[in-house]
Length: 112
Length: 113
Image (cartoon, rainbow over all chains, first blue to last red; front, side, top):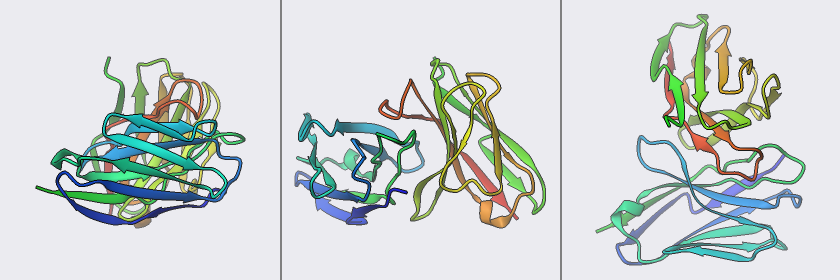
């Protein structure tokens, strides 16, 4: 099965700074790369995703970049705000599988 | 639309008891999933279904059974609960494939004593 690792496991940044979370995966057949955000006590929600035919995707302050050769993709958050504080999960999946494999999560704390 | 709902929200069981968790979605989604979330472990897939009448095992299926008799409902059963099944359980659904956004329910917090 897919082996997924996220780094770092915890991240603290000052409000306004940027945050980067990296996800590495093992299955070269994976071709779908989403990121989910889970606020404390809430359900996970999709914030951005990318397919393997695209190297980068942006949506306002968040972006995802993909390096398929190296089998990793990253979440970038710019101009962080306190409401960005949450746990972020990568969940690669795609071809040959009906399921996504979630990483163990990165807890992001944005300090006002 | 209610989206994805889960019943119950909280439950406490004694070891050996059985129970069923109900997940319902009103978005006409084909795919449905059951995950468990434990501290530091992320979300682990228990079972999933790609359509009415179909089910398949995920990463951690032991001790659980599922049924998808109706498209809108996905049931998770624990036949003989064990303390290791203490967890938060999330149901999710997606439209037609693993490439679609998964919409999650609010979760069920289960404690097995």
